[in-house]
Image 1 (cartoon, rainbow, N blue to C red):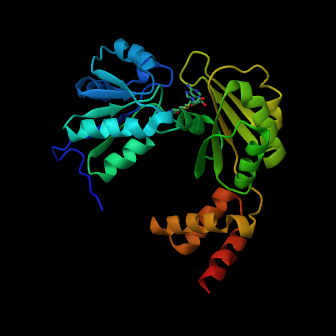
Image 2: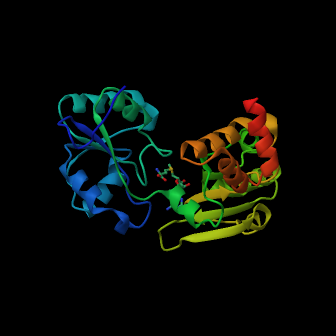
Length: 284
Ligand code: SAM
C-alpha cells in the first residue's frame, strides 16, 4: 500500500513530462517551469531533447535514459532520487512510457514511495482518437503491431472480436502492409489514419479499410491508425470477460444493472437481450 499526496510532502519527485508531438506551441507553461527547476532531466536522446530544451531556454542537466538499457538507467534515476534530487523524465515526443522508455523507473520509484507526478501535454493517440470520427469509448490502445506479417496477423486475431475501438501506431513504410493484414483479419471495418498531428501537413484519412488502403501509397510522416471494434454479435467464448467488465464498470459508476446493459449494448452493437441473458446466466 502506498498513498501519494503529490504536493503535501518533501519527498523527491519523479516528474513525467509530456512534450510536443510536433507543434512546439503545445508545450505548457507548467512543463517549462518544471523542466527549468528539476535537478536533472532524463531523456531518450540528449541531442533531440537538447534542441527542444534550448528552444525553451531550459538549462537543467540532461542525462540519457534508454529503453534497451532500462535496468541501469532506472537505477541511476533512483539513485538521484535517493540523494534528494528531483528528476523529470521526457521522451523524444509526447508522453514518456507511451511506446517509449520509462516503465521500469516509474514502477520502482512508485514502489519505493517517491512522488511520481504526471505533467500533461500532447498525446498522439488521444489527438487521433478524438478526431477520428469513430466511437471513442471504450477504446484499446495497442501501440505498434509486430513488423513480421505472420506475427502481425496472429496479434490481430487476438483483437478480432473485441468490441472496443482499436488504436495503433505504425511507421509510414509499413502502413500499407499493416492495412492489408487488418483488412484480411478484421474485415472491411471503418478506420482513420491520423498523420503528422499538430504539424503543417496534418491529415486525416477516414473511410473503410479498403478505401483507406487505396489512398495510402507513399504516405509519409508519423501515423496513428484507428479501427472500429467488432460491431457484430459477440462470440461468448472470446468476449465474455470484456463484456462483463464493461457492464460491471457501469454499475460501479452508479447505473442500475439494466441501464448498464442498455449502455454497453449501445456501445458495442450487441443485442440488448443477448447481453441481458449473458449477465443473467452468470448470476444464476
Ligand atoms: N510517446 C509518444 C506518444 O506519447 O504518443 C509515442 C512515441 S512512439 C516511439 C512514436 C509513434 O507515435 C510514431 O511512430 C507515430 O505512430 C506516433 N506519433 C508520434 N507523433 C505523432 C504525430 N505528430 N502524428 C501522428 N502520429 C504520431
